[in-house]
Length: 471
Ligand code: ADP
Image 1: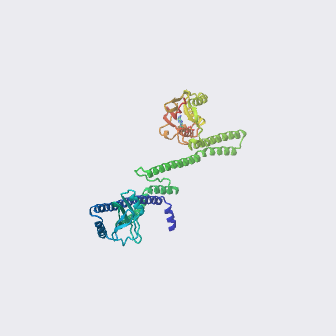
Image 2 (image 1 turned 120 degrees about the vertical axis):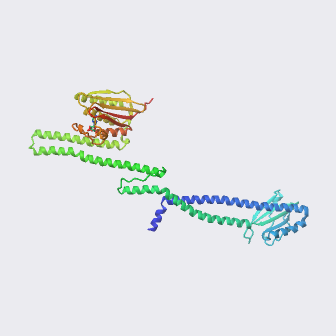
């Protein structure tokens, strides 16, 4: 159980972020310390070198003013005053032969460096070396310099103080780094948890939704950060899914309700014919009625499938560049005989060459639905007018009629599936024509609107994005 929890923690983003944060923090602190450490150790060594160099310069002046005997005497005093195990001084010939020295009991292992003498002979004013001496805990800094013609001074000083100081610096750093690492891990953990709290909220909402609470939404704060944007996107995705589910539910209800009537009618016809004794004529009528009802049913089912297909994405449309004017004109010609039959004047004003990108059969269907409705819901001696106009970025089709119109109460619902206004129930129809027209226009990136006055007529306006003409 515990190991499972640890495993889960190890795979969590918060844990990995904390590790990164603490790791980067530790590495940067280490780098900063190394820079700091090397700069102070270099500066300290430079100070020591400077002191030793000054010492040699002083002895040089001393030798020229007071002579070698005085120098021999003073080097012993000088080394003793600093501590014979802390410092030594030797006076050498240019070949490295010892002329004088302070108490060398602690420094027996240190001879004259041939390399240093050679460099002095080549003209270097001072030569410095750091030497590790056996049995000595600390290194020794040794300086060479000429104090007179053919006379070299070798002066060595234990780096005890400097190295002890640097050790303290190192210890302080190790302790500080350990404390900082713990603090960095804690701060990192706190920050990661804080940053990921929003993600956790999204996850728990998603879990609750998966368990059926479809109406839940992730709380969005006013900050507008990445998590808020994720929450907003997540919520709008949920809204869309909710709308789709509601739509599907409505569709299922509609199917149950609207397909039941034709099926019941078919059953009724069959039952009546069966129980009525049945002359040949009655059987013929029954067959004709059944075919009519079946056609109606098939028509509804096909239209519903069409709507679903068009709504499920523009990818299913076969888009091509087309002349909407030509398409509308053909539709008008197709409906002209129907208009004449019904005593309706069909006026069309459609210029050629209004170019749009679209799926020809679908746009034909949309135009036909609007024309069919206009003619269906307009009494004889009325007028149906079809116009196509081009604006800067749109091609606009309007189908207006002087028919029965739509009441303000019905107007917001007429694009819904299976919705039919009461005053139009005497006409044949399924209530799906406008839903399909709207689905087709939307899938083409356009829009469809309606303006209507009850008893006076309606105007349907379809706007489609214009296809720029190729030059
Ligand atoms: P229907 O098959 O009933 O015509 P539609 O989806 O095409 O279905 O239209 C939905 C309803 O909108 C119609 O039943 C009708 O009441 C109303 N309607 C559509 N077009 C017109 C119009 N031009 N004039 C008056 N009412 C209309």
